[in-house]
Every structure is written in structure tokens, then in C-alpha cells.
Image (cartoon, rainbow, N blue to C red):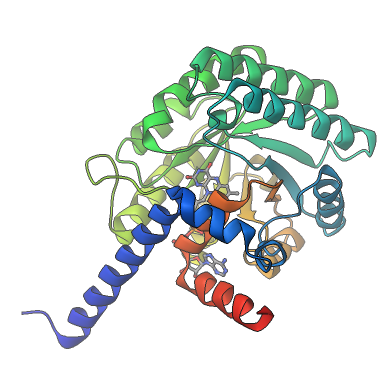
Length: 323
Ligand code: FDA
């Protein structure tokens, strides 16, 4: 018989799960997307998580963060591209960004994150690969790197295939593993190879139980196992989480395994735990902030709201005070 505390704890967890699923479902609704995107307040509210809409905004925020001792990975917002023209526009946006970063001398501290679905993965895997390769080429010329973001589980194999192939020509290309996927520990073992840059995150999409852990504890335990594999391996782990327990665990593992502070890095999202980002950097760690920019901020914002009920309260309060 569960205690009263366990009972209410379970009810709260169920509520959070339903809430998360509803927000992620809203992220796919064209009607809600149109309504929220057009609301006059939205654009100012998204600024907490998004650098702005233009490449100038991206460069300005990058400079501010770099001046605070942080590194940056820039994401040109956009995903699930359904036409060739859009995929080309997204690719060109990265080429422009990389050349601007090089012009202002920011490429030693700033790289780019690319979603293959933004450059055509749903249309044609080969096209997405070619577009990603031209971004990697521009990044190499500019003196920096690319990390391929990971999207929902239907794209995992295709994205890992592209990563493997890109690394043949651009060995510094990074990939992402999501600890909520049941397959991830095995993927980490396969990817823990010399010079392999792997970002480990929990995962942000609404995945079925057949492929993903649904309980937070299981996702966290899987994260700890994956982290153990990556930290013990010869690659370059990128510890992407705001979770204080996992940040501590990464530090403990690094100390235990004798990893120098320049052989792994912490990563957090723009607008999330900025004090902690600065604290870790001041303690001598490499800390990279993931900075999205562009006009297609809707899907990104919805995933941030789904992660944290506190973010929704903040969002609604901001809307209420501005209206
Ligand atoms: P979680 O959301 O479970 O939070 C755990 C604890 O962390 C909270 O209880 C709280 O204590 C603290 N915390 C979390 N957010 C906070 C905040 N904003 N302020 C204060 N405390 C906070 N996903 C994906 O599917 N594909 C990808 O490619 C990426 N890429 C990516 C890059 C980077 C740099 C990051 C940081 C994250 C991603 N993600 C991602 C998103 C990731 O999968 C995940 O959804 C979020 O990071 C949230 O998970 P956390 O690990 O932060 O823990």
C-alpha cells in the first residue's frame, strides 16, 4: 500500500507527464503555432531563450558570452523542412553565419549546431548529407566545428550514418546522444572512440515507451551510465545538462578518471542557469552555451516549456503583464 507521500508524489509525476505530452503535442499543431507566433508579446518573451532573429543578434550574443569566458554553439532555428528551397536557405544561413563569425574573430570560441531536418533530411537523406557537408567545409575553413543535433527517434539511424560519413572528411564533427532512448548506452559504446565529440543530453522529444524510458529516474540513470561510458573512453564528452546532480557526477567522474579539464566540456542552453554557467567557467571548466537564433523559434520554445513547468509559469506571467 503506497504511503500518502508516495501517492501524491506519483500523482504529481503523472500530471507532469500529461503536461509535457500536451505541450509537445501543441508544438506540432499548426493552429497553435500560428496563434502563438503572431501574439504581439511572444517575440519579446522568447528573448530569454533565443538570441534574436538576425545573424547580427547571433554574433552580438556570442560576443557577450565569450567575453564572460564561455564558449558557444549557434543553432539557426528551423526544423522539419519540407521543401528544397527552405533546405537551401537554411544551409546558406549557416554559411553566412560562419563567415561572419570568422570576420569578427569568434571562431575559436564559437561553433555551430545543425539539425539535419532543417537541411532536408525528411526530403532526402543524401541531400541533407550534402548540405551538412558544405556547412562542415565552411566551418573547417573558418577554423571551427559543427555538431549535428539529434531529433526524434525516427531520425537517429540516419543522423548517426551522416555523422559517421562526415567524420571521414571532417573528423571534428560532433554528434548527440539522448539518454532517454533505450539504445543509447550501446550507441555511446560505439561512439566512444578517439577524438569523437559526443554531446550527451536527456532528450527533448515525445517518444513512445517502446524506444524510450518514460520515467525521469530511468532517464537520469541512463544518463549516468552513458556518461560513465563516454568519460571512460578516449573521446571528448560534451555534458549537456542543467541537472545539478549530473553536473556534479561529471566532475566526480573526471576527477576519478584523471581527465584534464580541457578533455571534456559542460554545455547548457542560453537562458538556463546562467550563474551556474559562469561558476563552472570560473572554476576552470570549458562551458559551452547553446544559442539559438532566427525567426523559426516556435518548436524550440515549446520544447523548453515542456521541460520545466516553471518556464510555463514564467511565460504566462510575462504574457499577462504585457497584455
Ligand atoms: P531536466 O530538464 O530533467 O532538469 C533537471 C534539473 O535541472 C531540474 O530539476 C533543475 O534542478 C535543473 N534545471 C533544468 N533546467 C533548468 C533551468 N532552466 N533553470 C534552472 N534549473 C534548471 N535535446 C535533444 O533531443 N537533441 C539535442 O540535440 C539537444 N541538444 C542540446 C544541447 C544542449 C547544450 C543542451 C543543454 C540540451 C540539449 N537538448 C537536446 C535538450 C535536452 O535533451 C533536455 O531536454 C534539456 O537539456 C533539459 O534536460 P536537463 O538535462 O537540463 O534536465
